[in-house]
Structure formats: C-alpha cells, structure tokens
Amino acid sequence: MTVPNHQQDISDLDLESRPSKTRLKQEMHALQALGERLVELEPARITELDLPEKLTDALLEARKITSHGARRRQMQFIGKLMRAVDPVPVQEKLDAWQHSSPHHTAWLHQLERWRDRLISDEAAVTEFVQSYPQADVRQLRTLLRNIEKEKLASKPPRSFRALFQLLRQIIPGIPA
Image 1 (tube, one colour):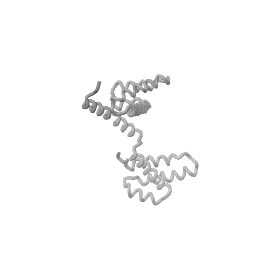
Image 2: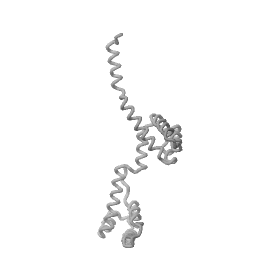
Image 3: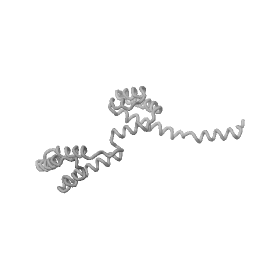
C-alpha cells in the first residue's frame, strides 16, 4: 500500500518536530537529578517549594528509604512525577537557597577582599568608612585589634569570623 504524497509529508513533519529519543532520555535524567537534589533538602524546605502534593509526599518518602533498589525505584518515580512540574522555578529557588548565583559569589568575594585589606592596611579603615558611612568605626577597630591579639596568642580566629559577619551586615548584598 502506498501512502499519498501529502500524508507522507505530514508524517515527516511530525517526526521532525518531535524530540529524539536520546533528547527525551536526557531530559528525564535531568529531572531525576533535580529530584535527587530535592530529596536532600530538609522537609521544611521541600514543603516551601509549593510542589504538587503527590510529588512532595514522594520526596519525603524517599528520605526514609535506605534500601538501594527501593531508593532507585523511588527516584525513578520522582523523576516521572517531575515531568508535570516546571523545573525552572524549582531550580532557581534551589540556587537561591544554595547561594550559587554568580552575583552572590561576587558579593562574597568583595567581602573577603575588604576583610583582607582591613586586616593588612590601616589606611583601608578610613577608605572603608568613607565608602560605608553607616559602619561603626569603633567596633571595626576593636575587631581588627582582637584579630591581631588572636594571631599572636595562636587562638581560634573568632574575631576574624566576626569581622566577616560585620562586613556582611554593612555591605549590601548584590541583588540577583
């Protein structure tokens, strides 16, 4: 039986518009990997994601499973349920929680540079206060003195960490 020419053209277009089997498999693996990241979250975070109830229950159940085979099957089930969810907002929320955005990383590097400069250069304190007038100069200088004392006494770097926390409060985070 021969297929009329126009029907063959339609079926050819249909084949071209569908994703390949390999592509579908890659997408399923990506959804399953996202599901695995979700399972690692705390239960409170999972419920914050506003996922369908069935998926939320499956994620919470997967956290309890210890058997390798049962966990693998549960993860495949989660991957299947993930097909009904738009993964982009979920991924964005995970990235925000894990602070893996490039903007956040740049902000943290900025804080580290300021901390290193303040510790190594006394003139940097004046420059810092000019850039951030809301900074408490007295508290800043006290922390810097304590950092020196801790270094000399070979004590744990509590003031070093406290300085970083203070800088986090003073220097505004870079919005994403």
